[in-house]
Image (cartoon, rainbow, N blue to C red):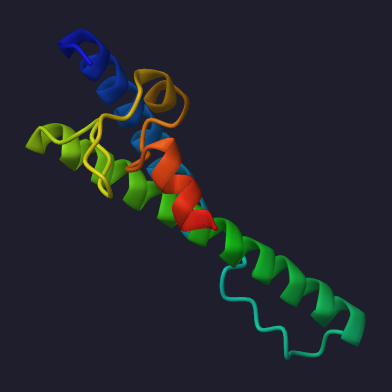
Length: 115
């Protein structure tokens, strides 16, 4: 991977980080974050509120995981290790990095960890 490709991927990662952080801030400031579902709502309303809260928590957790992955990838760029598989040490193909800029693994190692 040449410096131009690395800088382009760094820019993409920086934009993704800004987007994820904006979404997280939006959810943190969303109205109704502290709704008490045990109040005098009916059972169905309580169940709906619980389901919505569960869905929101799941989404926030996914955004936080994405944020960690992007921050880690940006750190690898700064350390000079970006583009090398963290498991086997081989180069990650640029095509894979373009598709998944925050990935720390080559395809073979990702498949091995998913099995």
